[in-house]
Image (cartoon, rainbow over the protein chains, first blue to last red):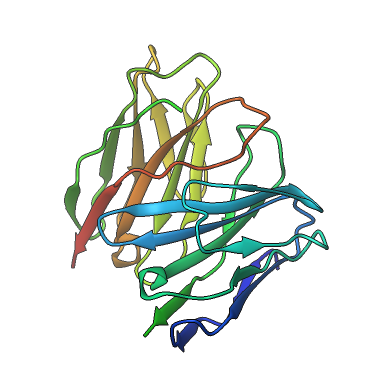
Length: 114
Length: 112
């Protein structure tokens, strides 16, 4: 089954404790992306990757890092989480380079930073 | 990306058809019209997309105005499971980015 898998689904942590949210897709997609969703602000893109070793900032990249060492994986790293990063995070993937392409989303990771 | 305008909310009764409108008056000739929905506590999921002609799939139909300045997502028989936020998104034929720009969407309530 084609899917985007995020882990963990829920995470509570404390300020400053480094964490990684994993994202994996099994569809051989070139493009992967991270979004955060906050009440009243909708979904905003954090980082994206057009292919292996190619990443770029989205609209709200501050406080986040990503890497793309393998095509299927695109982890989101919070080196020093802060309470304003408490949010619902979604990973997405698609084939790259055509406006008709469909994006597939993970089920989400709900992060609370205390 | 061109902007879309959708009503904040709509209501329907179960098993009735639902027409969800979207205005996109600044659409360009090569922009695709995509619809995604987000069920409660889930990630967005693809519903349907089109360029100029009306489209049908197992989930819904997409009716595109002749001038392409508006479109309508049609759920032929709403079920309780269709209660979600529906997003109308324009995607430019831009090979530099595949970003989806989500607006506020239409929250659809379905009553039994």
